Length: 114
Length: 113
Image 1: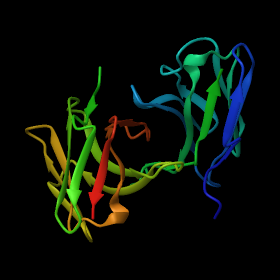
Image 2: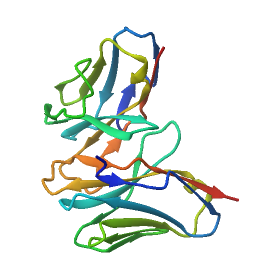
Image 3: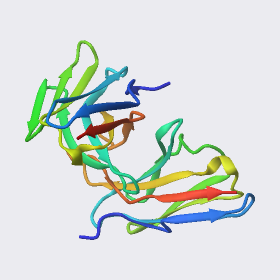
C-alpha cells in the first residue's frame, strides 16, 4: 500500500516560471484534495475533486493556479506564472466514501519561488 | 474567517505529564471532528476523531472531548511521550458529508525530557 504519492518532493524555481505538482491518490479513493500550508494561514484547501470532477475551487488563490484530474489515479496542480509568495508546502490528500478517518495525505511538495 | 481555531501556536509539556490541546469552532453545522498529527517533512496523519453525537472518544493514550454547547473540543494525551512532539491539527467536517474538511492552523507540541 503506497499511500498518496506526490512529486516532486522539492521544487526550486524562478519567478515567472511554470510549476507543475503531481499527485497519485490511494487506489479506490474517490475524493482528492489539494492543500497549501504556510506559517501565516496554516492548511488551506485549494480545490477538491470527487470522482475526477472539480467540486469546490473556491480556495484557489487566483487565475495563475489551475488543477486537473484527468483520471482516477492522477492529478496536477499548476502555477503559471509563479511568484515568490507562492512559496509553501503543497499537500495532496485522498479519501474514500465518508471515511471516518478523514483524508490520507501525501508527503507534500516544498515549493520555493525565487 | 477561521471556522476552526487553535489559539495556542505552541505548547510545552514535561514527559509523563498530560498534554491538553484545545480547539474552538464557529460553524454549528459541523458533525464530525478530527485530530491530525504532523511530523516535519511529512504529511498530516489521522490521529483520532469524534462524532457530534458523542462527548468523548478514547484511543489508548489519546482522548478527545467535545463540548457542543461551547463549540469546543480538546485532545488529551496522557502520559506524554517524546514521540508526541509534533504539530497537531484540529479539523471539522460539515453535515453534507462531501469529505471536505476545515483545518485549524495547528499547535506545535514540545515534549520536554
